[in-house]
Length: 335
Ligand code: ACO
Image (tube, rainbow, N blue to C red; front, side):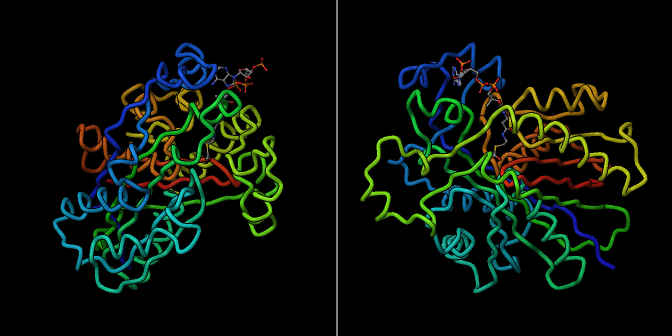
């Protein structure tokens, strides 16, 4: 049986830095509130003049990952693209990557699992490789949040948290036993879908209806988050996903060399770190610099941790996410 391992990593974030003080010019918020509640100091938001979009950023990150895997675009057998902020309602971003990178007419799959998008994507890629169907799969997480946020006091509870960016990984077939992706665990609980959602436009209420109503109070086309409800579920589900991943492999929390939690809120990551008794050098966070980049967050953090030499051969790396859906999960990797 084959195993799959990450052979290339890359990320791209827009150059435009938006600090907490910048946000305070557009809405009633301040640096102290944002840092105290979330740990975020600044985020990157696309400058539309640059031409960056969700797909364009994804393609930029993908190029780096493919090069670092010592492959060319023609070696990639399949694309998996995770985002909640696609350039178009349909088709999804995967086909745009195929086009932007001028790849052969390989398959492209879109994943709609928000903050868990990269975990779901990695798990799907792992299955395709383990069955022998594909050899090299490009997995991308990319988000353009800034284009769809309400940049006013009414939207501040959500808007201050999210940032733009992309990350990519190449997952390749390996015949080394006990290395690469050891297991993945995926979960969902749809009864909480509306606690963290962008409701419209949807097929239940399409654009002409929204325009006809012309209701200034209608916020259905901005993301809505019941922050405290999400927070309470996040800390429980994050922990469960990590424990499940460790138990499935007969491992303990002491075996973790690097935990990369989805960058939802630094306070959530710190809670998890404390709960599992992990030293500072065993948890990687970069939400301070990028905010929450949803499907891109884990892969950007994984790439940076690896670039900084914080992940070494044979390390046990645990990735865990929780987010809108609700969806959550983990991936355990022997690097
Ligand atoms: N600046 C200043 N004040 C603010 C801001 C802001 N940006 N946003 C809200 N406030 C105010 C509120 O209006 C409220 O004021 P009030 O007490 O007068 O009514 C007060 O601050 C407290 O608001 P809460 O929403 O209760 O603040 P909370 O402590 O819950 O923090 C936060 C909010 C940071 C969103 C937190 O709940 C959180 O991080 N939740 C989890 C988010 C998460 O994990 N999301 C999952 C991933 S995202 C995804 O999947 C797409």
